[in-house]
Length: 343
Image 1 (cartoon, rainbow, N blue to C red):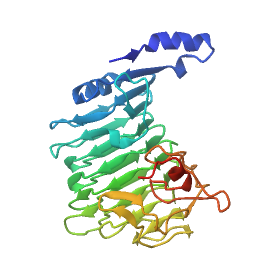
Image 2 (tube, helix red, strand yellow):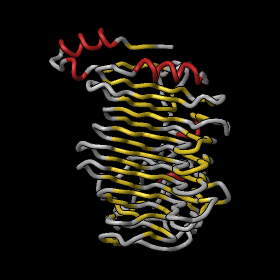
Image 3 (cartoon, rainbow, N blue to C red):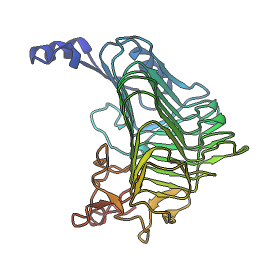
């Protein structure tokens, strides 16, 4: 495992006039070693500087031990968790399918709670099982939440919140949920796909996600198979489709160029949206077919900014004439096919 010393880096930064506040500790997890990933999460608790945990490609079997990070320290530094690295973390492929954290149906997968900002990128989080919050939990009381370019799939909660739970309890932080595939998650009572609660003064941005085929398996009492959001939310370029009961909770949301089957509540505004079959490539493959009506139907200027890549790491190519990109997590622009990236 390679570790970049915080002290050495801090000295270098101070010499450049950056100061200790810009220091960062970077650690490289032993490839495929879930226990080492937990060790690095534990080591980051209480750190006063930013910690970047780099997770090499491979599958991390949890064997019944949910990955946990829980810091109540007032001076806690930011935590960044990113997948897609090679074994020595000298290079990265930005494709979440290459770095899998597997709950094996025995435990929740990744639960991170902090007083500071957290980002989670380029991971597959799957097969979690818990009473509540089986897949990914990010719960903070300061800073921003960034959950970008992940696959969150096939997690099950015997109660609620099977796939994603993102919460800002207080403060002015924003939530960015961009470019994710959230699919095949199930809960018995409430919220199969995901729940986002921003109880602070910041905003929530949900952009270019595909949230599909999530379900409620028990009585539908206020159940959301898809995505539930609370707080000031801008939702753009998303596909909410095939989820049990309700695809998206739209209360007070500003919606721009989304595709959905069913909405809960009334958005504060809704422009450019559709309610059509996305025409996914096939069962379990949520890329858009060549005949999809959602190609070039997303805006290039969503609130919170357009993701620069899609979930496979391809550039978000867009039609310069119409200023559009594809809806959802996958981009099927003509330029991708010119470069032989036809999937």
